[in-house]
Image (cartoon, rainbow, N blue to C red; front, side):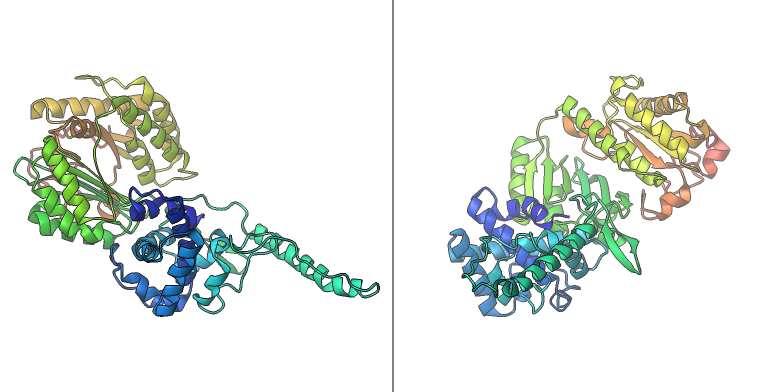
Length: 530
């Protein structure tokens, strides 16, 4: 886990903006190491562990280092070392501290932050300058790297100098040095042994416990950033809404903001709550300001993922104003207008991402993870047709093998369209496309009883239907776990009350997402045994 590289990649661009000064980038890199060492102290972190730290809270740095002399020393030393104005250095540090705090919390996931930072000390310790020992809690630098590890850029690596000893006393003087070298070598070997198979850089949210003798070692798991995708309608209503969140706390925070902005319409937001996603959304604290801005633009769409907000609107002037207003409301975020649709690029990228997700499933995968991996791919059917493109067949072949190998995996394949044709036509076309995917998988050996299908037409959009990009995202195939209990209890939420879109299991109109009593009595397009 290279914590410094992660922070440099995620936080520094938000702090520096268009200023790509190598000196400032290097200054922030060294600050991140000092900051991480400070947070590794349980007493320091405990002072604000339960606070809701805003990402733009520039006073947070003052609360981490309560001693004014220490704050002055940090900014002065870093400014001198990197040839940056002292006032500018202080400003950069104040901006970076709350952002770095959120990123480190996200990396730590369910592991306590001090434990996570101490477990990964080797990844940032060599960035800490020698002078920082005076601004860090006593003992934080006691566990120095073993022999051969670079401590910092300010530590000399030149060989030790010594004066010539009289013959006869030379070996006596040399013995302690030899002993230190041997001890250092042993410590280095031990450190290397503890770091076999290091974890790749990622955004972990959950931790697994692996036995190591009588102790437990926390190992971070890879996760996706939490995200929110919404679109507005012609009358500024909430037209589409999807959310991925790592826990119910984040889900509730986002839902409260959606309800404040859109009222009861927020209930249509579909949330996937699972520990595959981060438990922190960088823009969550600004949603109260962000959502009303988007709501005031008809037929607009917005995607918040990680530290980036991507927006679109059919009117170019409205789009540019939307970007400007959102950037002012969330200065720590990167706000961008969605670019022109690159159809082939979107298809290729989706297949690459889906293939990587399939590779990362491992043995005995959770069916929900299989469903998510398959849903990443774009199946770009030809206009008015339901023939599987050749580009998707290799991925579906892999999926067939996995579905057969995992016991009790039952998937619902859902077809969706844009709003370009009539409702009836779109329902029929989406059903045919979902059936085509099922038929292909069955032809590859999947037990047909493990798969069911449903055509939703245009009724479940994930984006606007007023732009080319939005219509492209609405034309899709989704896979979900076809298990009502799992779907209801483990995060796939269609509304706050039920899985039936119109909340009536006996309405006899057969529009339910999953089969219920009216489907049984009236004969839905879904056949649970199909």
